[in-house]
Image 1 (cartoon, helix red, strand yellow):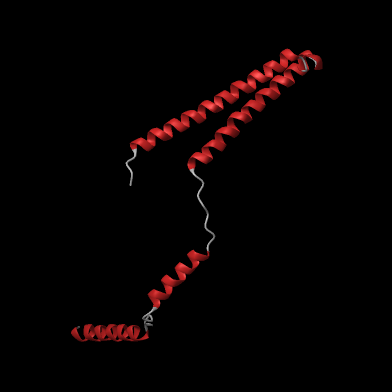
Image 2: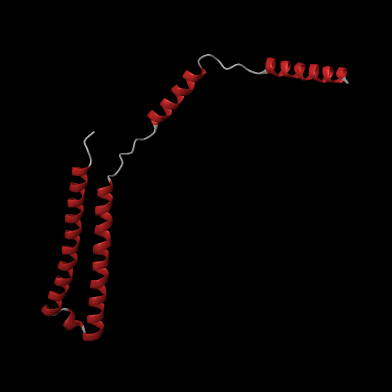
Length: 130
């Protein structure tokens, strides 16, 4: 039994030795070449300047508020045209209503901008300088 263990053990060592001899050794400067390749790829990639969050928020608010305003105006004008006719839709009283709706939505957009500006200033005061 002991002989079988020795033979199996010798065979395992022989196989291990063969595998270690067959294993390829990495060149000395492999790490340098890999890092150089990564740096080269990063240098060749087009650099994108990130858009600030506040700029994205301004556009999102603008599209949302004024998109809703145009939907309300379209419904208002369409309803007035269908119910009262062309003359009412072109009358000065109705045009003042359209201007009032546009003013209310514009004022609402202005208030969102003022609120955003004030909250940014509050955040800047509470964040310590680096």
